[in-house]
Image (cartoon, rainbow, N blue to C red):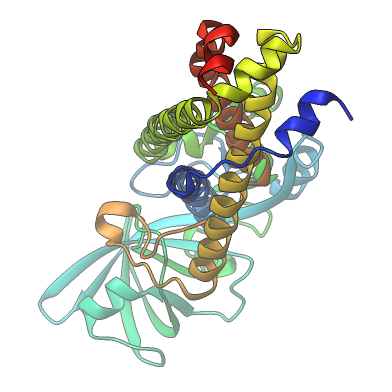
Length: 377
């Protein structure tokens, strides 16, 4: 064992408040990282479930929901599955419609999917169901207008509650075959092919790059959720910037708390410093002794803060006891996602910065004159 480590093992850092301050700082940092990752994971996954990550069509889908159909979506799905990161390709038929309830008229977007199998049965969003005063088992009349008005009597199979509010909660789901027949399309035709990417490829840059590559190789229009939901991605970026600010602030708070704590430790052991100098130890070696002691204290606070933060994340993930207003935050609860690489990176960066800050009080050691301190004792 090196002499620095031996001496450091016998020094005791008595600044308990410094340990508590460091634990609180790391707790806030880890919670910030977990919430930022939670928002990103929850929102991007929810959008992917609704529309896929990339929508491929002959022409961009308009508000009517009717475009020139993809004539052979199974072949396109097989071709798209060869792109790196594509894990699923699902056809969809979109058609705008009108729901009339008494004297009230509601516009809605109907989406035909392969997951819905019972003809003329729909899944209705909860906000629209509340406006219509309808529930599962009730029937509604839907009007589709093109060259002539087509009317369909639809039965509500279920009412779904979307956890994310992006303005698309008016989508009504029904079997893809119903809308294909309504449009006069064949079974192999669809409005669009929705591609789902691996969750690790949902950054804004990767989504746009993949969409551009698919568009270039297929000759079709390909749009990503990064463009369709640009405002939401901007909001996620803003959250990330806030997290960076919190990490910097909490690191500074922990660092300056440790600076004051280390200065107290140095003043209390000024005679020890003088004795070590008289025995021939260099300023650098003596600084290493006290930095080891400080590092042990920082590590203890870091572990305590991490443990408390992970416990909080586990409770929030299991119970969702902290709620949010989805109109402002897109989700109805505070999402948390334990991003282990992000947490370890935040821990390592904060620990390194704190230790660098502790080099400042270590300069005090060079000012200690052993001839004075030893005589004083």
